[in-house]
Length: 103
Image 1 (tube, rainbow, N blue to C red):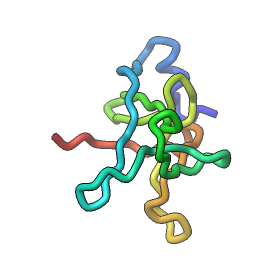
Image 2: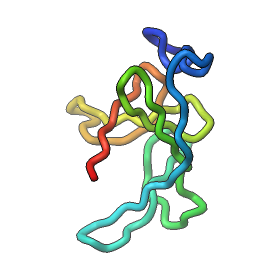
Image 3: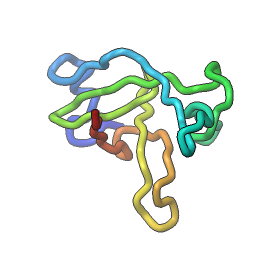
């Protein structure tokens, strides 16, 4: 369900557009550990094979950069409460987190 206009408004053409797909490689102490994957309950998991990695896309909306599973309405979110602090999951629009790219 879209909140505050949300991405549904963007999909109707008034704002936002995806910017191509990508996968996230995960490193630990400079050593490749795997890819960002997803389990059946929506949590992010370590995928050892690229084929099991989640295809993602940037989704700019209202001045904020979001990441979603390509072609879906499942947006990446990073937990901020004590119960799920720093856990990554994929949720509907109301649970989406904004991201910043550092280059």
